Length: 282
Image (cartoon, rainbow, N blue to C red; front, side):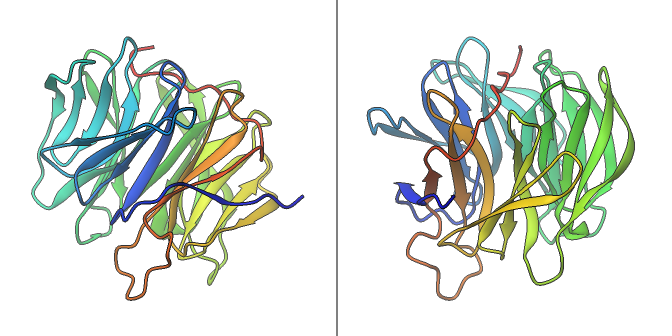
């Protein structure tokens, strides 16, 4: 079945990332990392907002009770519903910034990082509890990207982009174990970036420099390819009242001749069935 890719928000984001559906407000939250902006878009009304952050922002997710949790250059912070900012976990490392992040079913934020020059092993993945307690889960990470959980919460999927793989872990409470390969993106097809998991347990992953989103089954079989009008899609998430629409962020950074929609937020209506995502704090 062919679905039409539509323009949700025409934008010129340098590095659009991390779309997230907030059911409490009926809006999509996404970021432009290098321009230090958090965007929101309400598909029902068309209303948009932009929040300027004081540092590069790798991800922004809804907080229980309102506001946002953000993965910044120097750590993880939060904004209350009225815009007041506070650090939850501050750990500045010269040359490193926050990148993609995701909220686990228990309400904790799993926040990734990378160095600006993409030094191999220069990033990590941490788990930040709602009280700000942080634990390093993975080290020796280069570009920490897509993170998501299976519908029953027993598996976690993860992308360290330069590996070309989507990996899977077993989940035991707050711990992960038994890392193994779910799928590998073949050379020339792009690099795996942000991901989301649907209600069938399939993994949808955006392919940087691949102009597509792919869906893999829980067994790692490629069963769908969604071509896109942008060369650098960065991440995807289901949204809308029935979680049936797929939103995709994109980037124009590093492109000599960006496509007309590069840096925009795209949407593919009625393409699947997403999972409800927890807000930070539960």
